[in-house]
Image (cartoon, rainbow, N blue to C red; front, side, top):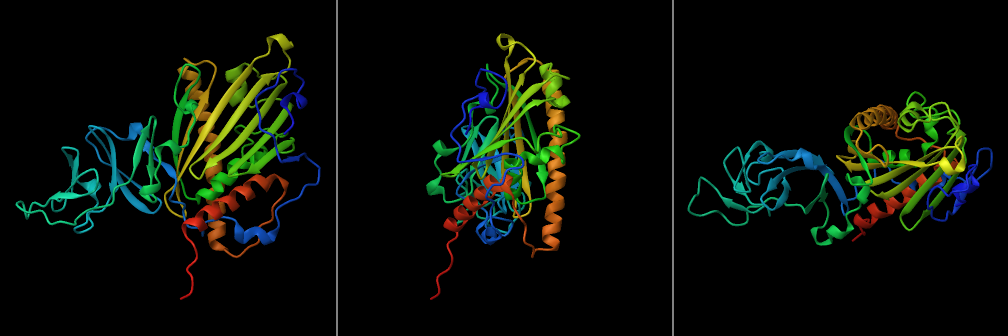
Length: 389
């Protein structure tokens, strides 16, 4: 991947960027994914990937003494705080299927609101009121590994023997620190999670879908670099010189000036993608220029094949104590994300209504197509085809 200093009129490198395997510019021919690859790409028919850490909720969602219910990967889950952390159980009593979230917490245990069956943090029933002297053995509900990395609560929905907390994705900047500050948001989306990941890897849609929020006319045709391989998919796009949209121009004081806008999109895991933004005023003398950084963690948890939970964290490295700026940026980002949600939900309606259709891809889709193939391989590994007897 070419250095940023080769792209914009500045002698200082904007950021450290890994080498790239592909480079594309507007008007240049580039190899594109073939139609024959369609069956090798993940879509709404691909089984959900369970052996992965996903965000179940925000830390703030889990109030002490309260049960929090959420459907994750087609399973109803109830989460709650204990004296020693957080517990997550299948939200379905083993007796008569009453949601445990309709019950209450008693001494770090969940009591079913129907017949009073009581379950510990490991899901084992230790009390049946109708048989107080002898609790029947073998009554339990599934428990799930769960770890709190504030402000997020991560859950493992797959094989518990493979759940390694050291593998929980996420960068330190996702939490407030001396270097970063920001805000958190949530949206429920009626779309398959694969298509949100794909949306985030091809931001050429900013010039059109986001024309009224953070898109600019020159964004779609700006040069971009792509890196794919080993489960990592990165796209970097450089727009310079450009005029920044208000969401970025106002907080940085760059309204109406020539600026550089470098955006790096990174697929991290089935549960997480990053978007990193660097902004620079090109009209200032070299010695007066500074880089402004904004980063967004797009945290994606499938609710089902056709719905998802979308948490996002937006941080910046400037004006760290300006709450009004945090609110302005979050409001602006939410407006743009609502545009994404609208598009994804409209696409979902069309795909469900006409499931047989051959979509075509172009050079800008290379990272997204590679990512979808990667997700398909992960899903196939968890769900190998049944061998004939």
